[in-house]
Image (spheres, one colour):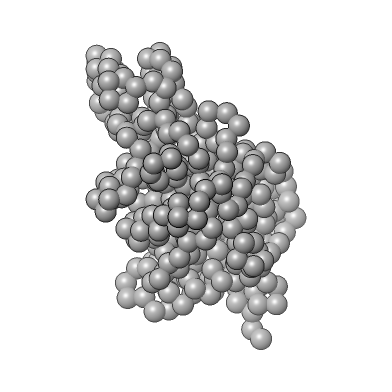
Length: 349
């Protein structure tokens, strides 16, 4: 049997590149070697592509990998990708990856596991996606979007702060509109902390969200499919502090993950139904992890993640295990359903 050549992308220039490295290692170890030839493709901090050998994959950080590229890597230009790989498995996360890579791969006509051009872009923008989710009756956090142009106008900071205190109150959550993994996330408890949090978040994006603090159970749910998506069992992810950190989400031994969650069957079905509706509404494809809160009265959607982190300790694998699949089975499923979708598409996926 001729093996399909899988280009496994890792690294990138986002704040999530170290998570990408952990995801790529786990995917690399679990791809079916009887079916697939694995080709490692590192994305450096300038978004240049490099083919690397396995020893670089096991270096401590992406910075270590990048410092060895000229000695142990081969520069790959975009135009070469089509001849090098049959399929791209994206294990890159965050800005310039989840939102930008799908478009490049569409232009190059290479099947991949992304959420699609529209899905990838809208999933990174928490401000824009919430308009769509609210339009179909789904619950999202109460929030105010602060734009850098408004924030930097003289005397506007106090005016915006007053509006936030009146409409959202303290404590509140501050985060960039297009970041993930708790990057620049803060929970200010007064106006001084609020202003500092907004200033910090604006270092990462031109729009910052200031939203209500949700109480209840935080849950995350994987949704899979193209035409008929379905949700796996949700996972409850209790936070140790004010909010769930990136370490708790993705690094071994730092998180509690309860699958299925400590919720009734009716509530679990409601969460699954809501996540599937969100998936369809945002035009997502292949698979996603959708985060939210059960407040005791309603399910509130925080955001989707596409492709989600695939580190060994992430909740995704708990949910996959509940179906009876192994990690190898799941990765094969993702490659097969996305390859079929790209084969049958009319226009961008």
